[in-house]
Image (cartoon, rainbow, N blue to C red; front, side, top):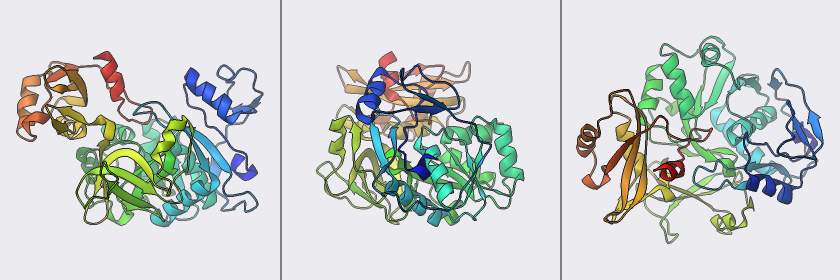
Length: 413
């Protein structure tokens, strides 16, 4: 409704810090809060508008040409997985470019349904609504639905064409319903929001479920690169595909120079769906180079086919004894070990090494065996990448979107 009316919106996260509330009030000056349930505690004094809970949504395919393209559609906080969440301004032009690129790549049938399982205060859910509205698709609202209902829809309902999931959701679906097989018209699982490992992709493929791996963020109005649907079963599981639409990806070294294929570096993005500014904090705008390029802070490489392979956040790198350690590589090997249900590796200050790698592990009862894991890692990884210490924990802290929160592990170390 706000899209049609040209009214900017601010999808509110489940929990807001004092700093976030202050930023919203000072930078955006909201005039009202609309919700299906009363929520006045975060914003006392704002008029409250109660809205009905819709049973479903059907896109009209209509565009509002009289509303300026550079007007803000929404203001959203980034996930904050690597530090303080940033407040981003998404324009209508950004959203339209992202929707067009997505639909042109995936080619879902007009009138088919896209299953919504992601919260609307994340770009993955919010962009899905606008994408379907503009291109005449149905939105099947499965937010809060149990996994049995999702599995039945994918398997039995021929109108269900696509579903957007994060890796933790796909893993839960495969764990709970190992016999799941999709209906004949199912185009695939659009997978993004957090890193996914080879094992998870392999399990989905074995079940006949097409996985369309993607890479994107709030700053790009959702997915920016994507594995092409026709390659869903035979693409490299590490690949997040090629840029869609008019999007561009460059890999640069620390001096800003482009690097060759297969050489890892910082991921820079440019295109119509890339935002142009951060509203808060102002220092974050140093990520833009003035020519439309955004430094994501992520590390990755382009392969010979121009496909993006994402490695890690640049601030996740561990330097131990002068050697660089990619924690994601260590975690990928640990995930293969029997009995390990989840894990995360962080760098901790050390007088001798400068930093040492510490692995936090969630494992089955009686299976905590650091010496065996060190031996197993040593057969696959260089010696300096094997964690110096292992700690058993009940759970690995993650955002609601499934991204590791390594800083929280450092706080409890």
